[in-house]
Length: 241
Length: 396
Image (tube, rainbow over all chains, first blue to last red; front, side):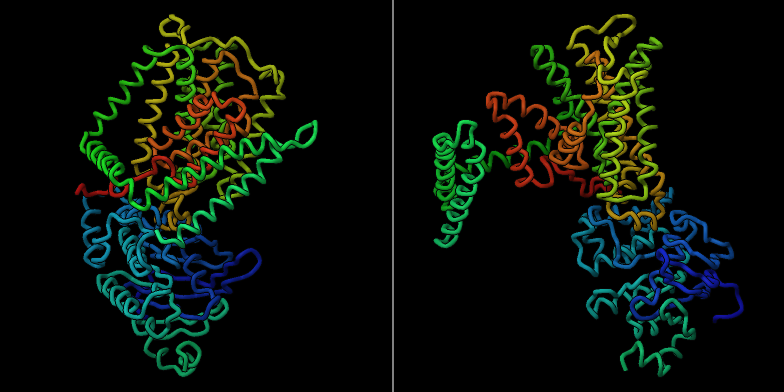
């Protein structure tokens, strides 16, 4: 599937740094429309930095980032959701002292079509029925799994074309992780391209079509997910064999 | 209550009293003539007896012997709450407003004076509430904008003979400009660092007032500032000025209320909760933080212009750090982000010291004690911001 068309999101030799320490040392990757692409790697490999650089929270020092063929290196982070690029950051980062509904509203902050927003809230509630029960509760009082659902629901409120997910399984019980991954696949089947950063390489590779392996700021491997899943090196390094 | 719990309680009480004695003696016992013990033990004795009495009362209450007395009070409270929730909001508001309108007609000059400063601080508190309570930017130099507003009116009216009503919006604008000036370089800072920079800015503004002899007449201040007038009729009575600031305060309350429940208000809250997440959701944090500073400063500017007109004098010593701290204390004590909370906080901190006048020397001590106690009992403020479901899209 990764051929014919032009990619919806592309990174070309992107370098980014915290002060003088380079976190990404020239990353290139392509994401095609309709895919789930996963980025796996150990702690500190630069996975979250990659997503933060795409959203321009961290500036790329070198290289180009293209979204729908347009260079977005200098597009402010606040402009991206309205272009259809939305991130669920690591650690969920919901707004703890806003209610669940207000959190969801914030996801649609840039939108002015109030009528459609109601439908979208309904859709999010269908996807995450737990959130409907808790809609008037403050975000900070939700459990970890519910917060993850809220963070994803909030991102969906922006009607993203490309959804960047940073470690959605972090700190969740295995049963919940499975549930979250099922929902990710469901979101993808509704036409949303997903970039999935994960520590849980096994699950991520099972869900994704293609995968990138990051090691200390470099892409060391890139292949179709099922091939990575059976690759002996990968199994040794990331799947605990 | 078990015997063990009761023992623990009495232990805590005993330790507290001994600690109090250790603190009290150096305050009262060390005199120029030498050491003195009588007075310390007299005061300590009173307080110890009171503490023991309260402890006994508490134990009896916990044991359930007072339920017969307490139950009617609790149920009365419950009924009152019910009544409050049933009464439409506008009736309650018109009662409060009616009271505010009638107030100067039935009270004297002293009450007018206190109520005017309450209303000034309400404007200041609500303005600071935007910056601190909504946007979550700790501002320790807020009073500078009040000063900018006050000097704007003082200078405009003296040099150009402009009327109060024309100067009022100008004072708001100059304060907003000052707010943007302090806001701009601090936009990348958070928390403690921001607090220190704003503290510095507040001091810079005060020092400018103090040292720019040519413009502000330095520490001597500016005298004989004209009073406001309406169609040439000078408002020369205190109760007339009361109505002027009442109108300004009501406008401030309405404006802050509208802002609070608008998209902008929610974006401010999102920034307070998590700036990066807010940015990822499409909030222009740069612009909105600047707007928070500017809006907060505008209301301080209005209050400042009125202050200059009411005192007919401005001097740098009205705009010290202590004033910023007081306004901040009002916001925190009342309940950050809550409009009725801030108003109650202002009432508590302006009116309480007046009520405590009979304590004379110990007035500020009692005042400090009350504040400490308040924060221990109600850390979220007197009237915490409760907005669960209120701004939500569905009404059920």
